[in-house]
Amino acid sequence: MRFSTERPPSWQACIGCGNEVVETDSHPRCTACGGLLEIRHRPPNLMAAELRQRFTERRGGQPGATSSGVWRFREIVLPSADVVVSHPEGNTPLLHRVALDRWAGIDHVLLKHEGHNPTGSFKDRGMTVGVTQAQPTGARAVACASTGNTSASPAAYAAQAGLPALVLVPVDGVAAGKLAQSLAYGAKTLLVRGDFDDCLRLVEQASDQLGVYLLNSINPFRIEGQKTIVLEMLEQLVWEPPDWIVLPAGNLGNTAAFGKALREARDWGLITRVSRLVAVQAAGAAPFARSFAGGFTLRHRVKAETVASAIKIGDPASYDRAVQAITETNGLVLSTSDAELLEAKAAIDASGIGCEPASAVALAGLRQLVRAGQVRPGDRVVTVLTGHILKDPGLLLRYHQEMDPPPPGANRPIEIDADVREIERVLQR
Ligand code: F0G
Image (cartoon, rainbow, N blue to C red; front, side, top):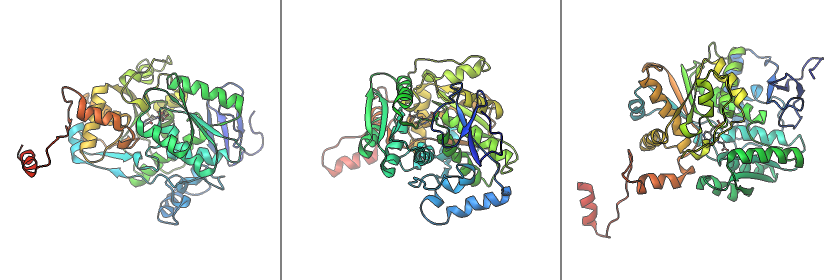
């Protein structure tokens, strides 16, 4: 259906067939055609300058949800939100390290570090909105499939809201930090004998048949929250968009959110031009990069394999939305090998910043584009680090302690006797 009277402040629309439903409808997909839904907002009735001022003033205001890096943008995230479930989240730093400029071969690259969120990944920005929206729908429980971060985040937010949480993760390959978080926050954690794509199919069936509220990024409210990564970055750059925004891509929710944020920010006068988006995948899990190389004529699916377990995804759910994001921003999609992403990660870690393996594909991808001459050294670039260094301690220890021969940047620990002369010997080396 389509609203025949004046539309409410926000509603849901299918990006496939255009079907429209009210904001409180809890179906995760379009019930007419199975397509992906998107939240539409009536343009805010404030001038852009006034909006910008509000967003920024709230940051220094009351502690709690009002100054959250998500909810201070509430006019263009979820204006109807009343009782919000907020940690709070967001307000993450935009970092710069000369060592990383050198590594990538560029004059000045900034890193927006989403690992500084409460559960250590960008997922918290979507989850605060998703869990807030679960409440008016009367959900009995919330659920998600995950490669690890998406499960850690609703585990925490559902605990705060007093809602039962169900998370489905592949039995093998979820990083230790993420699994530990889900267990500790009290989510019912199901180890599925299968990969992420199996988990997602299964949880969609559960949401259909058992009435649990789905919190994967096909849920359009997640996308609204994740838009604030871009909004906050634009604000930090005084609303002067960078030439390029480079981000890791797996299930493609974030790529979709970034495209929507740029489109709306331009439509509502917050910015005058959009940045070009670059989505980077791991080579063993790069169906979107393959589709891009073929001009998006075919949607590819693969059996995914990569050390970056967060983005080990073969059939990304937000494909259609992400195609729109890349097309509208004249963007690019590429992939990097596991060796390249590990080298980038070692450089980011050694700069004192640190991130989880999947996050590092962004910087590895940027170096590729600089070497290929597609990004010029003088371009203004922001890369997004999606998760915290401590999410995947297992891979870190293997990289530094075990891999033989030692990979670039490997920092072997040194075992010594309890004797000060041994320390002196190490210092002299
Ligand atoms: N980086 C990290 C650290 C992630 O955890 C994910 C996705 C991505 C990048 C890719 O983002 O899916 O929006 O393209 N993790 C999901 C999860 C799939 O279950 O935690 P995307």
